[in-house]
Image (cartoon, rainbow, N blue to C red; front, top):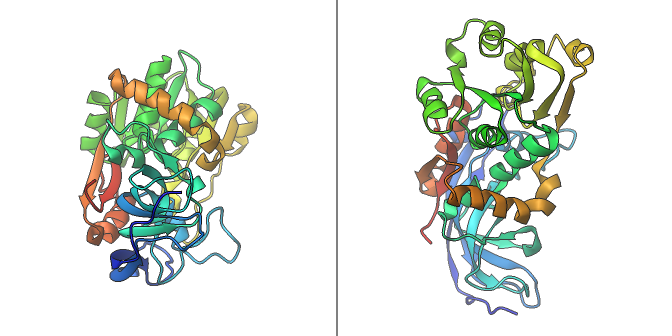
Length: 349
């Protein structure tokens, strides 16, 4: 059993949720406060204390900021408590035989400097510390596994498939496009700025990309880029984009549904008016959750680490320095302010 780092209490800066949110969230819905943390685990406990180095900003966090009458697929945040999401940390104290002081890990942690983790077995050990540890909030962590599982297991790509990715420069989208290219597909992405469109074509190897904010008619844009139709649509945004895509899918097309960021801040979600296309074109539209693939994580980690070492996949991060920037950084996700994977650096390793 690993030794504890001592019973000292230390200051623990944290980002808490002040009130539940309806509509578009604001920085004022959150607050940065200083509490205390003990750098020890309770006697006889199999818990661990983690010093958080990086925490991830992900769109799904918006849903956890709302009070749900019916339970959602992830629990609502607790008012007055630190926000919770995936992060990278260093073990400071452990009562668990598999986790030693000094181990580098990633898993579901608090938006705070130190977190007591009651179930260390829900965390993954970091096997490739030769890469930036921040990669474990993205390409080597949850978003990377999301892209890999959603594209290959749900999308079932074949060489020569026509692939469309929305929110294509984000944490998941930038990887889906590159995995599609490695598979031999033709790939087009949409994003919300000319800078991001340029990134898709010059850095991530997309065949084509367009700024959806400049397109008056999304259906016409998709017909322009996919005159023969779309085989796989990797869905990140929902709303009018999904509606335009359904009209442009080929028979027996696949739509892995990863997220729908355009809908998260609406009090009344938009409807989709042409769902009969799913019948007419024999489409398979399937939602998926990354948690269902955690048992394949280490296989994924080795595969993605190999692509990185061989230079077959590249990756862009947008890092905000300091927990005090957490609220503004999280809100920025919903206006597309980030370029690449958004995360917050809390401490240096």
